[in-house]
Length: 432
Ligand SMILES: C[S@@+](CC[C@H](N)C(=O)[O-])C[C@H]1O[C@@H](n2cnc3c(N)ncnc32)[C@H](O)[C@@H]1O
Image 1 (cartoon, rainbow, N blue to C red):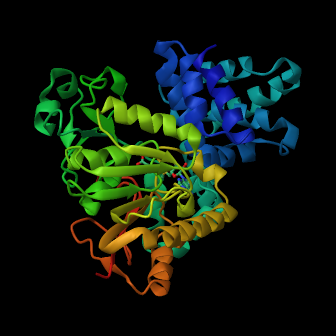
Image 2: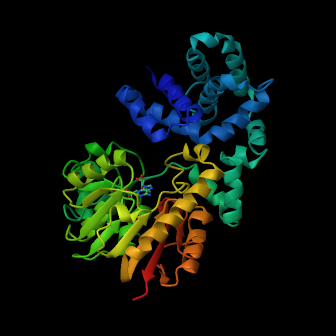
Image 3: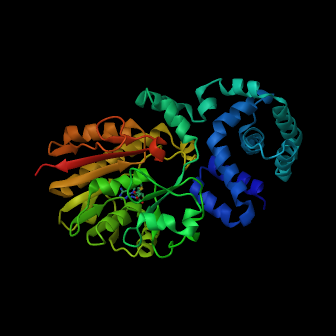
């Protein structure tokens, strides 16, 4: 199987069968020869990122739209068009011929169509393509219309900045484990120094690498010297500011990125109950705790139903890293923008409110809860917190003034700003 064939398989799985890119990607990479993996990743991410623009480039070249049952031919055309429009290093004849070779046996009738459309694309000039892409926001920004409209409404001054950032390649950000090694010492290790690492100015443990790499090959991975975590996500544990000896609830914990950070900050000297609803994700949480040599009480349970798992002892601090639309991390997971629907956002908003209300009584008077999401949508973030503050008289908002926050209440980090993901944090305190 070559990279293009695997990319075609992956695109069908994600865009036609609705599977998540992360799940599909790891399966495909394991079947791909190591030297072909960079091309596979580029094709898979590239077509998903630019799906809306590629459709706009192909439409004027097609006599009529494809039938629904031939959606796979549409994806093949996009795979070819991506190489022609976005990958200068690939010669046009290779892009066209290799695309035709991927045609399923039963669909050889489409040979002429693919050949004609892709060759005609090679004959168009930059100005013509730019005109097609300027037709509408979906083509220009490669996002679905409903999401563009929602971002325009939520972020009248920042929507285009958000959409553009969502189409950028993100950095790879690590969190160095201070219980094992200092950040400067880690960056000075020859294998790390070779990757041109930079300390993140807003996250004391964060190291930013511009290029992706196989982190399992970096020094100290098996020994728990570092984790992969974006600098925006790294803010959560610092904002909650856990102290040794406290009882802390991490209510939506898997795969444990923030559980382990809370433990690192307290030298593994605090009682963390790591709750997770999805049994399949608990395994990864356990693996991360083991790799980092940290200790938490792990439990499967629904955060909205404390009666099933709470022992009645209140918590000093609660982290609610809520299930959300993930619209803040589209640059890392471009499939998200094509999978989410407005109905999903409504359902998620209801779930988040139910969990907030269920967990608030578990917090000690004077205790703090951090509500966090990797979303940029107002309904899940400032709208959610506004509504919660209105119906919860013993809750007050603690200001966050050291981060580049947008909007209020809470702190919305926008994707791409200071190289961070889109993330929302609201720190809530219960009246003493
Ligand atoms: C944003 S992820 C958490 C990421 C994690 N905090 C980290 O930093 O690695 C949200 C998690 O909440 C879990 N979840 C969703 N609904 C839940 C519920 N009602 N109770 C507990 N966990 C839930 C999901 O399965 C998912 O693992």
